[in-house]
Length: 96
Figure (cartoon, rainbow, N blue to C red):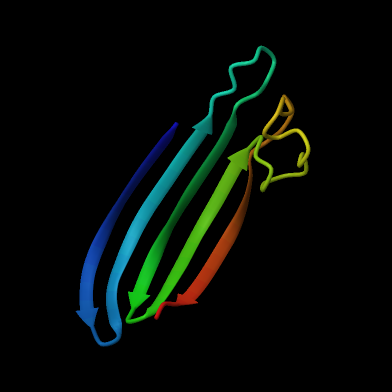
């Protein structure tokens, strides 16, 4: 399951074109008995300045291979003791 919400604020002042706030949530509903569901939530903003786009966000997850130490079981049976883990991310790109 996935739910995404966002809103773009048009700025158009100087080099700043717009700022977009967003939140993306996803759930992997594992239907096998004993398997723990996987979750991910990403909250952040996107800043557009001409051809340069910068994402600044915080992502966290539970029973998710990119968060925590359970790489081999996160998207399979999961870990019943697994806690929420997160990371801060900044990504900048030049689009031409």
